[in-house]
Structure formats: C-alpha cells, structure tokens
Length: 356
Image 1 (cartoon, one colour):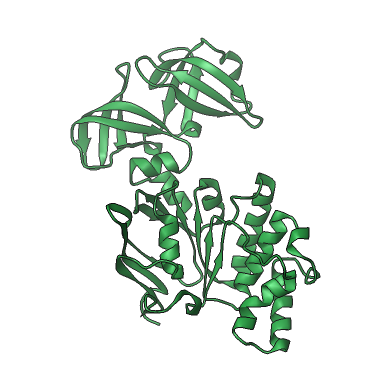
Image 2 (image 1 turned 30 degrees about the vertical axis):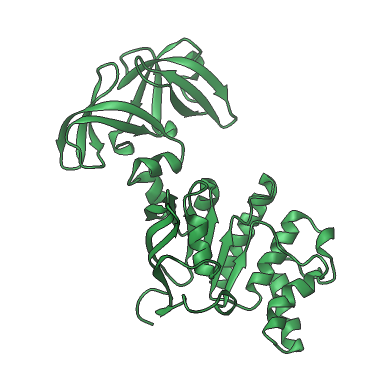
C-alpha cells in the first residue's frame, strides 16, 4: 500500500451560516490511536460522524487505503463505532448483542459462536453470553458495546465520548482496558473526548480541535512541552498566563519585561511579533518558589495555600498581575514559610515557558 492508511483531506461541514468543521486534514497510520480533543462545539464529533458516514461533508474527502469512502453508505464502510450511550438492544442477551453485526452479514452460526466467544474474552466478559444488559453495570455494558464493535474485525474503530457517562473509577478502569485491547488487536482507533487526561493516557497522537479547525497535532508530550498556539497551551495541562512586554527578539526567542519590572530572556515566542504585548505561559509545576522578595524572577504575595496530598497548591499574586498558580512537591524546602500574606519570589526556566 502506498500513501497513508486513513486520510482526511480538506473536510468542511457547513450548516447555513455556521461552519461546524473548516478545512480539517490529517493522515492516520494503520494501527494508530488518534484522539480528537477539544471543547464542546469544536468540530471533533462532526468530523468523526463524517468518517462513519452518518453525515456528508460539504467539501473534502475521506480515503481508506487510498480509496474514497464518500460514495459508500455507512453500513457498508466496515467501520466499528462505539457511542457515549451504550446503544445495546435491551431485549437481546449479551451474546446476541455482540453477534448482531455478524448475523446481518449472514455469517455461519459456528463462526458467529466462535467470534462472539473471542470478542467477550477480549473485553473480559467471557461467561456473560446469557446476561441481559439491564442486569449489568455501566462499565460492563460499555465493554459489551466495545465487543460488538470489534467482533467483525473492522480495520477502523471510531469511539465518540464512550466513557463520559461513567464515574471516575470506572473511566479509569475502562481506559486501561481500551489501551490493552488496542495493543492486542492493532485496530486503528479514532477517539473523541473533551477530557485532556483521557487523551494523554490513551493516545499515540492527539489532534486538538477549536472552533471547527485543528490547532495542532502531536503526541501528548509534544503538545504539552511545545504548544503551537495559546489555545493548545491553555487546553493541554494546567497553565498560567501573564501579561508581558517584548523588549527584543532574536530568532524564535524573546526578551520580555514582566509585571513589576523584572526582565527575562530566552523565551520561546510564537506568532511572529517583534514588539508589543504578549501572554507568557507558565506551568504551575515548573515554577519554583522561595520565601522573601528579590530571590527570583518575579515577586508576589501568597494568597492561598492548599494541601493536596503529594503536592501543595499555592496561589501567588504579583503586583499588577493576575494570581499565579504554583504546584510544589510535598516536602519542598520552603513549605514551612509559605503562609497567606507571606512575600515570596518565583523563578522558572525560560525553556519551560512560551509567549503568545
């Protein structure tokens, strides 16, 4: 096979005056776990439904192994789908729910029995063939839905917010199972979520959506360490944004003046500006803190301290700036002096920051 396994080319979806998806393009490798991440209304689910064949694009194309899918109806695309709601048939047993895609494909009964057994073993529900969906937990029902989507061995599996109806403990459990199943089967997965932690746990790569377009595609580590836009910087991980002024630019690095007059150089700069105001991103866990003024890059006053077990959350207010969130490991040397009202200094490595 030449070219990408799955290719989304210039997809647009317009509803009257509203552009739900605008010129989305990406290539997905065979066996890859790609997550569409973004807030509600960002276009991620619409893109997935176009892939599934539930909606037609206004423009663009979807290619699987080099062949367009647009003229193929959804039920003939041989693509698996798992929804937020389990969409199980309540009058059918677990075994019959899982067997359904094979029965409509008129597969022999012996083959159906073997494949249903294997699919339930894959999701660790072997022995549940005769159970009714109403007598199962939400997590078990979602496993049945996953088995049903995989039983006919589709080359691509689409998952639209499949865990959002579950509580945190169940979400964590099923996330682990989805990752295991992906590793065992090698199926190509396109997964939609608004939960950044879920995306980081599961994905090989993540496409960050905003307002119908893709802001950036990369691994979780790439998106976190080197966000391309202010939106990505704010959506992936926790971030502070501090107003600053450009003093000089050399290549992609800038020298900035911070609130209070402090100057710092070597800041990665995005957007091509050479002067004016910028937003400086600071990760809470990449900021160090010392008691007393003049011992770092930025001075401030402690406004709140919260114990969170393995870390301490400190809110610091610099003069003339918004409150900054700092996360310190439990046992940090300065903890004994960090109390509300105490003057403190903040320090950070320029390489761990970004200006937009």
